[in-house]
Length: 124
Image (tube, rainbow, N blue to C red; front, side, top):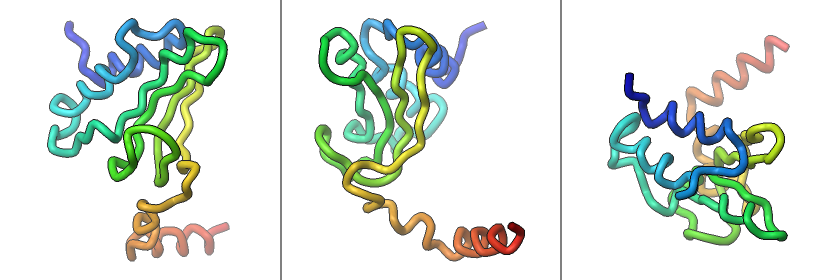
C-alpha cells in the first residue's frame, strides 16, 4: 500500500539524524498538491537546514514559516519547525519567529478566536 506525503514526512522527521539525503524540502513540497492545495504553497515558506548536521557549527532544522518572509535570515510570524537529533528522533516546535508575531498578528484578533479565548478564560 503506497503511503501519502504526510506519512512520508512524519517518518522522515521521526527518524532524526541522519536525515534523508535530499533534506526535507522534497517531503514538505510534496504535501502541496497531495495533502493540501498547491496554490497555498510558496517556496519561501519552507526552510530546510538539515545539512547543518554535517558540520561542527549550527543547528540542523526544517520547518514551515509564513511565506511573506525572506528565504533566509530572521523571520516573523508563526511557524512549525522540527530539530532532528542523532539519539531520539526530532523535537517539534510551534513557535514565533525571531522578528515577532507579525505578519500573523491578525490571526488571534479575528472575532471567533477572540470569543473562544474569552470563553476559555472564564472557565479557568
